[in-house]
Amino acid sequence: MSELPRNVRLLTACQALTMSIASFVVFVGSIIGKQLSPQPHYATLPVAAFIVGSAVATLPVIYAMRAVGRKSVFIACALIAAVGALVAIHGLKTESFSVFLVAVVLLGIGLAAGQQYRFAAMESVAPEDMPRAASRVLIGGIVAAFLGPELAVRGADWLAVPYAGSFMVLAGLVSGVALLMFWFIEPKAAAAVEHDTRRPSSILLAQPVLWVALLSGAAGYAVMSLVMTATPLHMHFEQGHDLLDTKWVIQSHIVAMFLPSFFVPWIVRRVGEVGLISLGAAALLSMVAVVYARYEFHNYWSALVLLGVGWNFLFVGGTTLLPRAYREAEKFKVQAFNDFSIFAVQAISALGAGWILASYGWQVLLLLTIPILGLWACVLLHWLRSQRSHASAVRGTQP
Image (cartoon, rainbow, N blue to C red):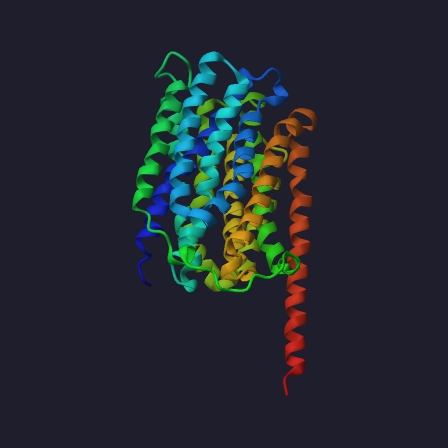
């Protein structure tokens, strides 16, 4: 098996640093939100604002990459995220909930660029190596799983204002991403003049494979955002588990989001992308059963690990299916539509998590994940039927 190019290794390192923003905000965002927000219902709003910032920035980021290349945008967004960390310090010092929300939105812009690392890696390799390149980049998230929460905890008391020191270190961390990106080599595919004919949007959107790819990522993110955003609140504040146990559950979840990437290429070779995403959906359904009625530490831990594995299989599977839906000239358009849709769904889920938990409780929140997976299953079955019908038609026309 050939060695992956330097770009992929560089993007893996940047993934480790950039995804630390996400694990940092997910861990500490709702805790700070509960302290600064005017009402308990708004406690998860910082996490939601972070995801909204990422979702809203997705289209501008991707179209900017189309105009000036990926490298410049990667660097600019990393610096914007560093500014966001500094704005968060000001929000903490002034005890301003609104300023803190602005800060996490800026941090979300950094994440929006980081979500494109997987496509940059896929463009840097041959088509047969795309699943391995995408999954290898996601492995950087294993480092992020520990790095982000550790920065939040260890820096919490470094300055007079709680967590201000944590955000100071985070600012330095994401500035390091900008420095690393100076060694990134723009993939030839991204810089090439596009000569392929672009198909109308109606034709692109009529492809069942596009919706399977999109909904695999969207369903994974929707379920993950609902449960992950609400878990620190339910576990720490409602069930009385201490902060270190809560931190370990979140860290284990984020490790589980990325550790399976070591094995995804092997799984894809044996069961294909459809098998991979089906295993992901099964893991998410198992997660609901594990933590629906019992709230011991091991229930949260097992459920959040299953949540991470399910997200990984759905997201990586959807990412590797997506190129089947576009030509080279169409890639930025389809990638923009895919990622904006996915992260918009993620933002809505994160926004609703705190409200659903406070208004209807943990069990209702878990049950809402089932129709999400049901919609995904219907689209998958429609695609598989259309493939079988097409194959039968082709066989029928052969002499």
